[in-house]
Image 1 (cartoon, rainbow, N blue to C red):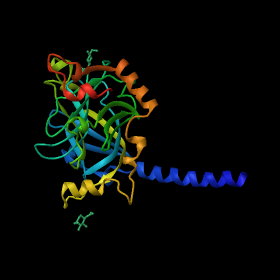
Image 2 (cartoon, protein in one colour):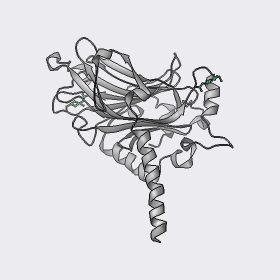
Image 3 (tube, rainbow, N blue to C red):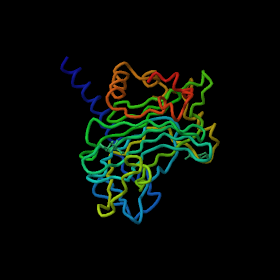
Image 4 (cartoon, rainbow, N blue to C red):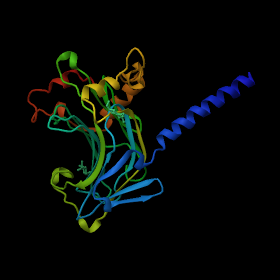
Length: 293
Ligand SMILES: *[C@@H]1O[C@H](CO)[C@@H](O)[C@H](O)[C@H]1NC(C)=O
Ligand SMILES: *[C@@H]1O[C@H](CO)[C@@H](O)[C@H](O)[C@H]1NC(C)=O
């Protein structure tokens, strides 16, 4: 028995070591600055992006992906962040692009950050939801993830699902699954809309506004720029020869525990849902009828 246990331990340690390596990826392995390199600073494994009255800053993944999970740990702007938006998102290119967004809307000191999520399908967004969080996102790093497969897009905060966008193609509703997507983040001034609907402007005397990042992790199928979308889609989909983890039943839908978590988030932390905004959408958007979550 003892022998069996220690052997099992060695195997488990091996697995944990591998997982540790994958999630310990450095910024430059996966990403590159896309604008305002002079507004980036590094300190050990922590990357900081700075917004001042001259510029914000942003970064982009070096590669595009189809399906998988992307995660980054962010510590949002401390103190007064009113008027600022920090975003973490996946997006494809072109006018008919798809996009999965986390947007963190700043606030005055002591007032809560809001998290806005949105989904664009074939160039059309207008699917905003807004949440407050069950912790102060400016005090510590928290992980924000997007899980994407052929069945669902799931937005997670510290691995708690906060939104699910399901594939309803069988009901004639388009689902984003044809276009390779990059992974992006940026901080910028959006004081025309971000805080209390644009009433509160950015107080530049409190600049620079700094968002900190660590724990970059992309566990997804890397696409090849030189081949057609459809060939990438094929390469990134399971077949008789191989099964990718993102096509397994475990991630085809939320499990019972996750469904309960999502219900809890919606009951206690959701403050806006486009699905129930009758003034914007007198006719409820088609996917809302079917998105139980
Ligand atoms: C900012 O704080 C106010 C007051 O607590 C709140 O109503 C608002 O939703 C918060 N967030 C934003 C982005 O305005
Ligand atoms: C991308 O595809 C082309 C054409 O099939 C191939 O020559 C090239 O090696 C591929 N590159 C990578 C990084 O997979």
